[in-house]
Amino acid sequence: MKQSLKAAYFSPQQKGTIAEPGSVSFSTGQVSGKNCGVIIYDGQNNSYRFPFSERGKRGCLYGLKINMKVTAKHSYLFYQEDETFIDNEARIIYGNEKWGKDNSQNLRAGFYLNDFDWEDDVMPDIKYHDSIIYGLNVRAFTMHKSSRVGKKGLFAGICEKIPYLCDLGITGILLMPAYDFNECEKIIDKKSGNEVLRLNCWGFKEGFYYAPKASFAGKERPDFAFKSMVKALHSNGIEAYMYFYFPPDFCPSDILDILRFWVIEYHLDGIFLLGTKIPLAVIVEDPVLSGTKIVYNEYDYAIENPRYKNVGVFRDHFRAEVRQFLKSDEDKVNAFLHHHRHNPGQLNSINYLANYDGFSLYDMVSYDKKRNEPNGEANQDGTNYNYSWNCGIEGPSRKKKVAALRERQLKNALSLLFLSQGSPFIFSGDEFLNSRSGNNNAYSSDNETWWLKWPKNEPELLSFTQKLIAFRKNHPILHLSSELQILDWQRCGYPDISYHGEGAFRPDLSPYSRTIGIKLCGLYAKTETNAKDDFIFIAINMFWQEALLALPAFKEELTWHLVYSTDEREPEILSSPNSKSNVTQTIKMVERSVCVFISAPSLNI
Image 1 (tube, rainbow, N blue to C red):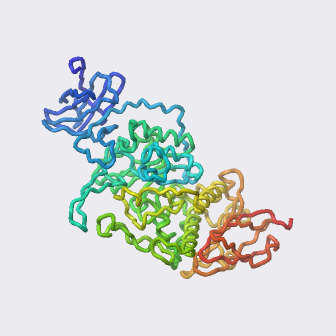
Image 2: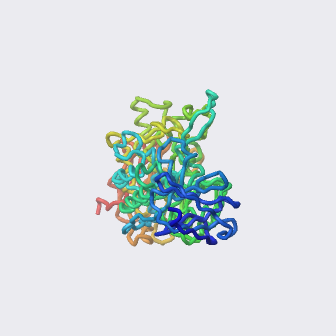
Image 3: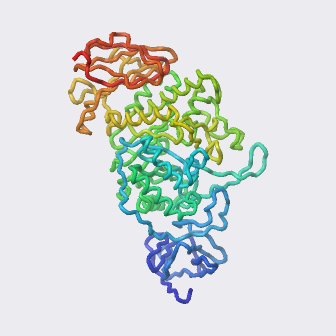
């Protein structure tokens, strides 16, 4: 074979291995010295060495082109003297196909053939303010037997759940790292003192950033499996995003190359960045990525006035302070109101109350303290600040009052999230009471603690979430592209948003207040949708006792109609329901509840 192959040297312009019809080109800076090159394996126990040369070198990069037809059976390694090692920038990784098996010493790089047929794939291009984002871990999402899918723990398993995602109403899924990484890690168990194998289920570590994770592909080619998933999501109007973690010493220019590659080759719609020294300013200004959602954590970076409106901020403060408001902490009404309307022009807010880290939404109302002992770190790992309340009993409870209170608190939480401006984010399972048994750092739990446990029948909370998402989508005043001003800037007789207490336009913002009414004027939706929306009134009582709220009057012949209450006991209207539309009414709110009203033509007309 080797005698029939022709090799030529060239001065490379960029790193990477590129397979084309009839040839393959290598450009790498991983080797140096006289005795270095590439070994090609043909899949039939034959290997062929091709040395690099100073004749094909630019800077520290070697360039080598071989005239040969590569297939999916071919693989390669680099060599230097007697040592062989894998291409860190390989597009395909062979040897990591089995989850939980440490084969790091026997990996080989495969050739990216780029022969997938995308057909007429169209990226949905959903604006931030219209987005509803759903986070998931590829393996955990369908690994449990209750998922009832054929391709458990795989990209294909996500495809089987697309009808569920469509019914739920989400517009985009956010994958935890699904580029290839070695999940097998050895640690010292703090309890026994012995070395044990730990499986890193989350994947926030350095990996093979150009290659989809082989163990998530099953028997398919990893590139085909990932692309098939994205293509299926797009055909159902769902965007695909992925987390990328980069360690502090990672080359900034390589980060940009990696992100471009995934957007161009894998049609990713969004990238969520984690790391401490990421060249964010360069990334968000890159023209190739200008149509891609670029999201960072608000604790890590600060970008002001980006050129493109594609930058999103994952808002940890929303989780912390809205959770505190939910459990009736003092002096949190003002903080909640800020988070509720916060949605600055060029930066897009992504709000969430639960994620892969910390308590799940259900555990947030079931545990006061973390239960991380199974992680093998003596319960020292994971945050101690969960801003949770167990509703009276720690952990699982069969008491009907506790179960009812927890479900009401979950409905309250989802209401506070989905009725806020910005982009709501929920993590898989939070829509149907999924628990991680109080473990707030289940990164190494490749078992039922971390796996999503799907319900046999549709829980009432899931139905509530579906309706809440549909309500948000149907009312553009709930998801505008710019921030509400608390002003009558249209001169229509109403401010875009106003706040109310026991008296109309007199909110109680004292440290002891836990009750607020929010009125949204649907006329302000016309500037974006060319069709006005209804008036919406959100009544919130996070106090542990009943509270009074004013239902503000209308100038038109309209009246308020109750859409839903998170408690089966509906609010009591103290003034006559037949009062004229220009008369303010008073309602008595149930403790720890949220009610939503919408404007409707008055019965007196």
